[in-house]
Length: 138
Image (cartoon, rainbow, N blue to C red; front, side, top):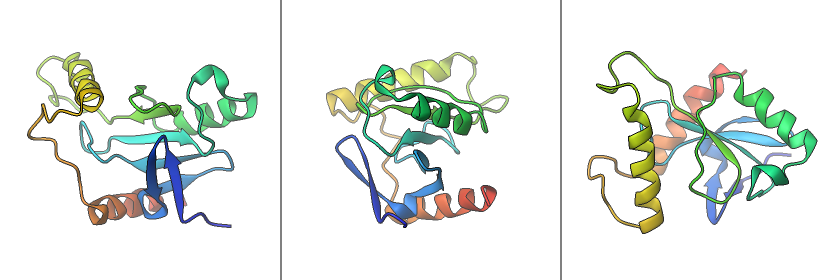
C-alpha cells in the first residue's frame, strides 16, 4: 500500500519527493541541498535520536545508506542521514563542506536567511529529481 505522504519531524513530505522505500525507511530529495544530489535517508517512524531506533531500523537504515556512502547531519529531530555527492573542486578546501553544513544548521535553527544563494526549491523541481533517482533503484 503506497503512502501519499510522510512525516519528517514537523514537515509533511509528499510521496513524489521520495525516490526509495524499504519497509522501515525511505530516501527523499532535499528542499535546500548543499550540493547537487544532496539527499536524505530516514525512518518511516519518527525517531528523535539514533539510540531510539530498533535493531531492525538501525540495520535497515545503514544497509540502505551504504548504497551511496552516508554523510550525516541532523537539524530536524527525526533520525536521518544526509548523502552529499562530492566531486573534485566543489569546495576550495575539502573541509569547507562542514562549514556549509554548519551554516545551514544555524540558519534552520535561527530561522534566518543567512545564505541568500540557497533557496527552497519548488515541489515540481523536487518531484522531478526524485523521479530521476527512482529510476536508479528499480
